[in-house]
Image (cartoon, rainbow over all chains, first blue to last red):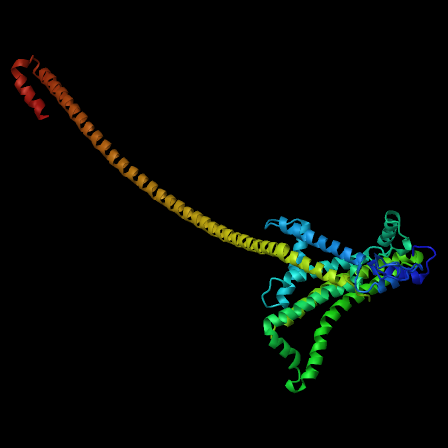
Length: 293
Length: 156
């Protein structure tokens, strides 16, 4: 725990709030009591303001980290791909090749149709989600503290108003952003391989035949919708809980040092596992979408 | 759980990263990996071929050595035989030579014998003449009796 004069609750709340940029409507009463005369684009100063901005707002921190990490992933792999020769690879290239081969093997084992998209999709999901999860291992106060410093000195902001969440996958927007794209691909591949009629038939004519179409549709619809929701919530839940435990450990005083270490060691497993599960389930859902029953 | 435009931003970002990976990363890396796999397989096959060839060469070498040994022993045998032959020939020619020398020597001896006999005859004729001279106590006229003396010495 870093900031003096903060209660445990406000410390946790502060850590779990994104840095939100959005539009506040005119006549809105801000957290400090001032009333806006006209609609204003601004950073939210309190969690309530962030909610009141509605949909037309953006979580600057998680979006920025997601993009930075995505660019880092693209950059490393692109450089490796450019440099790659059939000769003896150096250690870094060897490592990236290992990742590529793991992904390739899993895709080939689970997805039997031919597609140029699935393997790069799986690689991107695995690496990107892993990198975003990896942010969880950075001690919880470092980057938010740095952001507060920069916010206060460069942008002349009140440090209490500078929120900064560094793990993008603890933001449901990020996890749902990926899973909804996967969901769109599931529907696209279903229709592509079975036709619209086949896809609707699959949704309505099983498992109980044509006399129970509404019931079938309810059942199949739920199981279809459950795919993106479970994908996103599983990742979000795991990382959110992990982050929360890091925050709680940070309030233990000196005991946080061994406790942080132990939890971080466990967490290494979780962040890789969650990235891998997300990738595997994406491959499996898409292969189910392509296969005929 | 506060949904906002981040969701849309994330979908776009995701789409762009996947597209980039699909376009510029995956085909290059996988193509390279497949090439390398092929290259390694070729290398291993070449290595195996090399080993096979080495084995063949070793076998060939062994055969060659074996053959050489056989030839050498054959040559030695022949040489032994030839040596024996040469010795036999030498013995034979020595025997013949010896015989020849013996013959020649014998001829010489015969000749010498003949000469000695002639000489002896001469001397006997002289001795007989001297004896007859002394018996007769008088000078025998050599000229008168030469014919007789020659006849005697021829008879001896």
